[in-house]
Amino acid sequence: INSSWQINDSANMNFDAGTSTLDFIGSSYFMGGNLNYNNVNFNDIAMLYDNNIFNNLSFAAGKTVILFAGSTQYINSNLNTTGGCDAFITMQSSTDGVQAGFSKALGIVTVDYCRIKDINVSGGATFNATNSNDMGNNSGWNFTPPPTTSFYWIGGTGNWSDAGHWSLSSGGAS
View 1 (tube, rainbow, N blue to C red):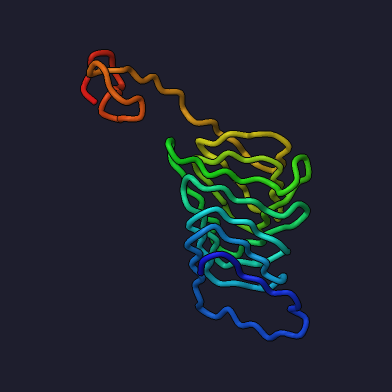
View 2 (cartoon, rainbow, N blue to C red):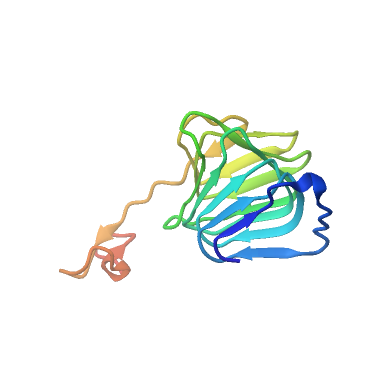
């Protein structure tokens, strides 16, 4: 699916997520109508509205996740958000200073390499944000910041973004 998923009136709808998987390829708006979903994967920028329930919810590395201010996304099994040191996932509310949230009843939720702002977590589970940055107005998270690493320019002149010109040691190999 590319672009949006919109349920406007779930009161008159019978929706059975069953074993379904929704894969969103491009930037996506998800207006879930406060319904239950099985597996939902966002592979680009994602904006989530309503108070939805997900069995498994996944976000791609290097992308931005925007939760509508005041909404809560409920997780039954897994919240999969693994970024990288060069591809942080940004998770934030739609309104600066107004929290949105995730909730899970039990267990441990670990997100990795995320920048998190205005996100509340609740429900009894432990929420860990490893190698992640607290960008402000968050609650319920256990943050562990990313490690600091020194890089050294090697190989003479070249393009700043060329990984072949960087090393972890002075004069070392790329």
